[in-house]
Image (cartoon, rainbow, N blue to C red; front, side, top):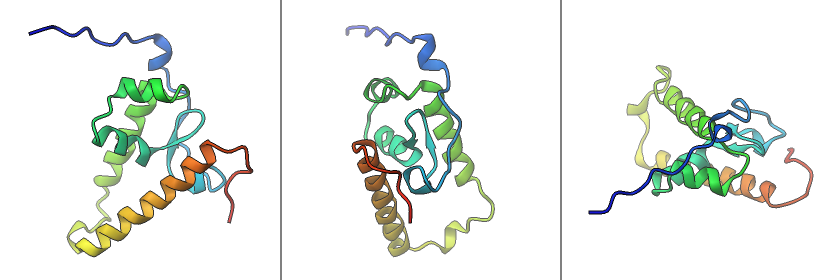
Amino acid sequence: MAIQDKPSVSPQMLQPTSHLTIDPNIRGGVPCVGNPPLPVAHILECLAVGQTQHQLVNDHPGLTLADIHLALEAAAALLRDPSMDWSALTLPEMVELQRELREWQALGDEALHSESEPFTD
């Protein structure tokens, strides 16, 4: 069995590049971290499919490990929200919620790869 070296961690990877951003003029108002802002939902989806934190940082130069941890903390805070009645959510509502999240993500991805004006209603 081979022992893998841990990825090296530079001090820049640990420093937060920004705080949690929620601005209707940035990525349609979805919660973001990093510089440029990356949606928290995108970070969670990448981690959920097996991408490592180091891969995320390497793929998004403006993102740090501290930003990823902030995104995880924000998601955990939302899940602990006592005002959310999880028992009231049904499967169709969950599917609709996922569809809406993907649409927001697509808007954010388009904004990352274009030189256009920020998204506004």
